[in-house]
Length: 67
Image (cartoon, rainbow, N blue to C red; front, side, top):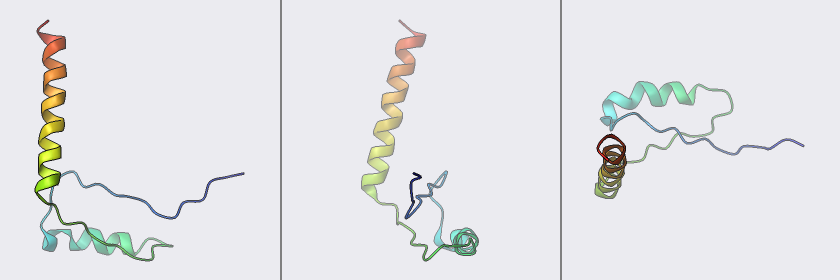
């Protein structure tokens, strides 16, 4: 038996202006089977989570490099 997918989440490499993202959104809409594309607006919670994750990775890396 195989799994059935109902959606995919696409994560962008960096925050992108809405007008710059239009070609990407249009391209995703052209993929067979795509019903809709709904962009998610970046907010302060996303920024805070990203910065905390970066700090955790940096701290872990520093523990390896400088024991």
